Length: 80
Image (cartoon, rainbow, N blue to C red; front, side, top):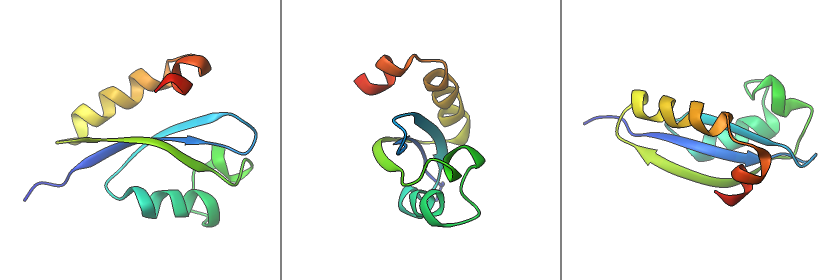
């Protein structure tokens, strides 16, 4: 059985957005909010809230989508 990957978008407490990839969205959001394993970017912007997630069949597809989203303007991320 293949592992599914998710691209997720978080809204940070300061109104900025963070995009990432994971195989377990709930665990990763928890890490961003409470753990040293959270991204450096989100540590100073807690709490974060999950805005959206999308499932991909492999890491390559998820990585391409993550890169695309990271290039978007804030208004475009909000529209997601």
